[in-house]
Length: 444
Image (cartoon, rainbow, N blue to C red):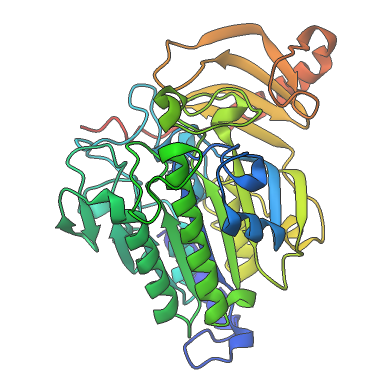
C-alpha cells in the first residue's frame, strides 16, 4: 500500500471511535457483506421478473431493502469485472484486461497488482476482520491470492469452475482436487456463516463470490431436480438458499441492523450455453457483450433500520461505486494517489438523495465499445457476445434511449445528434486522462 495512503488511514483510525472487541457495539462501524454471483442474468431472479425460478430469500431481501434496476458492472466477463469491484477502478486502469485474453487462465502468471488498494485492505486498516469465501479469479499464484490482497482468510476455487485442474484452496494451500462441486455452494455457505459467528464481536468484511451459476452446473442432492427451470434453476435456487442462511445468521447474532449486505453478479448470462445459461430478461444479449444484457445486473442492498425498506430505484450505479460507498459508511478515507472510478452511492442507499452517477463506460477488454450519458447510450462498436466474431464499428454510432427502449431495438441516432455530441465529449474527457498499464492477463 502506498505510504501516503497508509499515513492517511492511520490518522483516520486515530481520530475514529475504538473498534476493538471491547468497544461498545454502537460505536463500531458497520459490518459489510458482498455476495457476488457468477454469470447470473438480469432476469434470473423472482424479484427481477423470472416466472419459474423461486428466489424467496432474495425477494425478501429486496422487499426489506433497496433494489436497483439500472446497476452495471465495469466489464462483461469475470476477471476484469472482479478487479473493478474490489478496487473501484476500471480494468483499463489496473491492468486486469486484455484484447487477446479475456480472463486469467490456469497458465497465467499475472494477477491483481499489489499497488492496487482493495476494499479488504482499506477496511483491514480500519480494524476489520476480512474474509473471502468463493471464486477469486484475480491470480491463482500464491502472491496474488486473497491473503496477499488484504484478506485474513480464504476458502475457495481460485478461478472459474470449468478450468482444469479445478482445486480448492484454504489460505494458500490446496486442500481438494478435483473439487466436489455438488457440495460447493453449501460449503461456501457454511464457511460464510462460520466467519460471521467467529467475528461477531468486531467489525468484519465478508466477500462471498460464488462459482455459480457459471457452467458446468452442479446442485446438491437437496436442490437437484426441484426447480421448474431445470438444472439452472436448481443452482440459482440453491444460491438463494445460501443468501437466506447468511441473512438468517446475521439476524440470529443480532447483527442485521449493523450490517450492510450487497448482492449482485459479475456479468450477464452465458447465452451460448443455451439452457445451462441464464436470462437477461428484456435486455439484449449477454455475457461477453456490451449490450445491456452483458453488463446490467441485479443489485440488492439490505441494511435493516438504515436502508429504507421496499424501494425500487432506476438511479444509475456501478460495481466500481461500491468502494467509495463502503468507505463513506465506514469512515475510511479513499485513496488520493490514483484515479478512481468510484462514486459514493450512500445517499441513494440511505434514502437521503440521488445517485451522483450520470454516465457509464462500457469496456470490452481494452476497447471502449459504448458509453451512456443520462438515458442515452451510444455504441461505437458492437459484438454480440462471448465467443462471437470480431466487433463491428459504427460511424455514426448507434444510439438508444435506454429509459424508453431498454432492449436496444430502436436506433434513434438520426433524430438526436446532440446526444451523440454530448457522449463524444464525455469519451474524449475520459480518454484524455487515461493511463493504461501493461496487461496482467497477457503474462505467460
